[in-house]
Length: 165
Image 1 (spheres, rainbow, N blue to C red):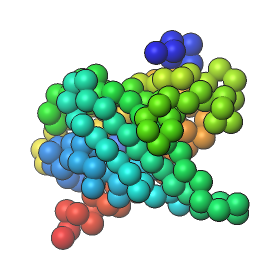
Image 2 (cartoon, rainbow, N blue to C red):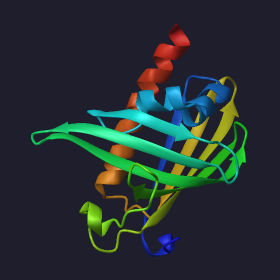
Image 3 (cartoon, rainbow, N blue to C red):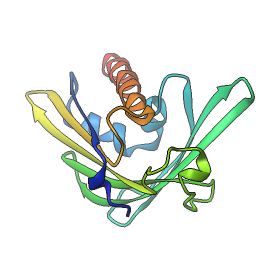
Image 4 (cartoon, helix red, strand yellow):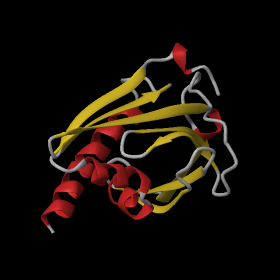
């Protein structure tokens, strides 16, 4: 893994009016994950998630652009899985087969790490859930950081729909 310590990290904290088990499912159940992941305008046609230590993940994010449909693929490995408490996985840009692709080849700025690490920590607070997500290796002022903010707004709205139905 490229040393993410040289770059700042994105750290986002959110409080959800939902039980911790439901927020855990949002991160670990592919069908739930597809509903909220990515910035506004993105869809997730593929989310293969083998959520266990050493398990692999492969996610496709798709967006419509003036030049047609654009796909970005991400792959990674689960490093820590502590049910309803902590999830840690690596993330790298890839092709549709999960082969890692250089960030430079994807048009990312120089110095963008090949592999980053996502840490999700959940805490139950009397029927509510505090979530702290850290994406190590992504500068706080990057498009990736902005994408997380939009994704968590989508997650908040999706959790509200799920808990009201």
